[in-house]
Length: 223
Image 1 (tube, rainbow, N blue to C red):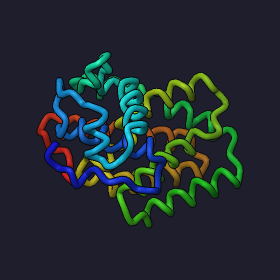
Image 2: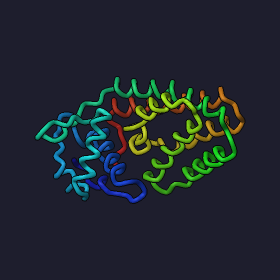
Image 3: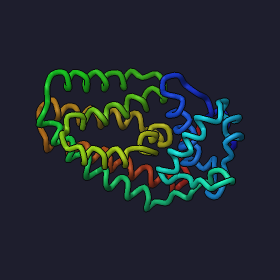
């Protein structure tokens, strides 16, 4: 891996989450190539952590389809193609707006205040690390009052993985996300279900379009 300055641990997220994020970004950016073998001890030394969070992170990345764990050989990096990205975001663009619409049936002041507070904190975030944390929280809040547990499980399955790390791999993603989140929030505050769900779907579809373009052009951000 060339860019070892990437591998820094922040206390703002759990160690497990941060190690997952570090390795996920490295795979997305091509620092770890398809077919490359990741040895727990070597990765732990490179990042500066014990082997336990690395082992847990690799198990999570296997669930996400980014690596394959092979007995006695460690983890092997999988090839992530455009079809994988399209499938994940197609499901997100359908399921998350449905969950948002259902969530808007159960609005109250506590929900709205927390949503506004999180959006304001995102605008003031001083690091990409903090923005990623708040971005994940914002998207979870959008569907937080949805009472369909099966729908929420499907969404959680799709949101885990690289969707939460796009602010750190796509050029200009933070600025664009803040603007698009502003539009979603405005429609929610106006209790406009159609406007809110369309704005959310548009946000997701714009992100996948730029994620695909970045992958095709090998133009992921470099830290």
